[in-house]
Image (cartoon, rainbow, N blue to C red; front, side):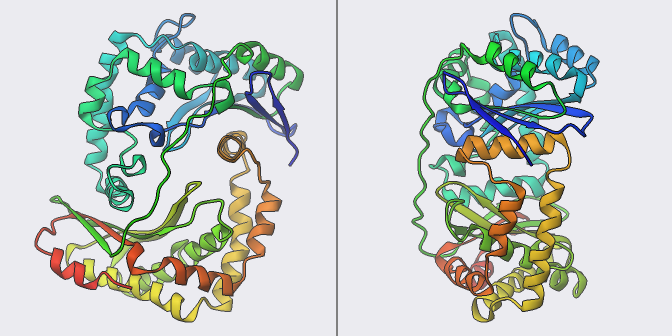
Length: 424
């Protein structure tokens, strides 16, 4: 897959991925900031700002004007805020890409951030917070990260922020955050698909050329201090108990990242994984159980998530811990090792099927790492992983002083018994 990378005089990076066989093109603007770059009083500001970009510019005065213009283009458009990046994108038929860029660049560079709109949107975001509070399968992630990183660290705070913060943000808060984090050096503009390359690069230079260079913001690093298994129970009347059980891992710069990814797939990456087989197929204890890994530059996590009947909670926890212990003791089998590594080729290709998938993957890599790893190189790195390496990293991360369990459900009287079984 060929791509071209440019850097404007102000430091803004541009990545173009031309694909002549496609009928669509995507414009994707990503900035290297998110909730990890907020202090406690700012928590929720990055996400709120993402909403405000769609509320009006000097050229497009209100949200309805913006929405109508993008809808008329037939665009698939949205934005998202994470812990370390925020992105804005629109996917259109190829001949409309310059029109889509005009809208999306305007939002990114020229949002008016009117005080009246901030006040109105705060109510919308409070409802968004309420919505996720009523979704324990989603909310349990916030509880787990609170346990894993601590509420004093930005990674331990929710991306949406607190209702109190959201209702108290003023226009000056947004302006100060923009000046600190939204700089040319911290921004990457990606265009992928079928598009006129010379016109697209000229449009980017015209729109972004005068953006302030600025500097990349600095985030607070994480240092693990945990010395025993941690348990958090959020008491709530639910039909299911929702749990996340996981451990600390190294970050994405560590040599073991790909071994952790394979380990994750072996334990809970699909319907043939160990946990799906043991928990669902053999015992019928959960509809779904899965394992995930999440990486930051300086830290990461391996997580198992499930929703279970209240009375089956301890059974499921014991099974998960048993499988972790088994890999530490015996490693992984040759059969599951080969099967999972073979499956990575297909899963990687799924992420490069459409112009928006490609733009997102290239943009996220460039803004966070200053490096783009192509699918074939990614596969090479995965194929270099050995069974011995997987066993070794399991021995390092599946330890008591890294073990964390977050639960949402009616279990206020079960803390003592749960703490007893929470050990590796």
